[in-house]
Image 1 (cartoon, helix red, strand yellow):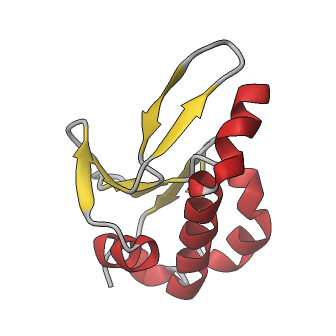
Image 2: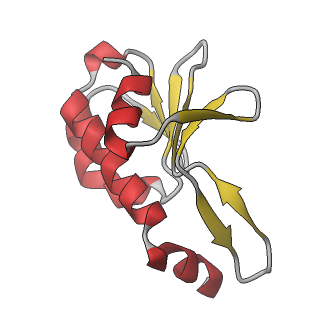
Image 3: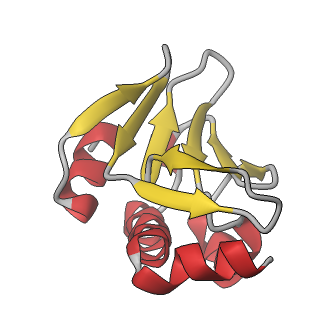
Length: 116
């Protein structure tokens, strides 16, 4: 299975490009207490030479328990780096993407971001 197939199945959305290298699915609106606002993909990945990047815009800490069962990976603030998709548990990855997508597309997520 590819990241494209996994995210399409989880989100029910068709992929579209955000910039030149990010493949996104769905969209959410964010607005911070500072007044900064915009739209971003609710689920996304970018194929990179060193590792594929899965964007988790609800934050890595929201998925700590599942990350322990995922298999080999590295993390950033909102990024999950996967060198070898065949080496990770795809059911766990699917659940991480599903939870992140559900959080970002819920009505309450934008309000929480606006409140800081």
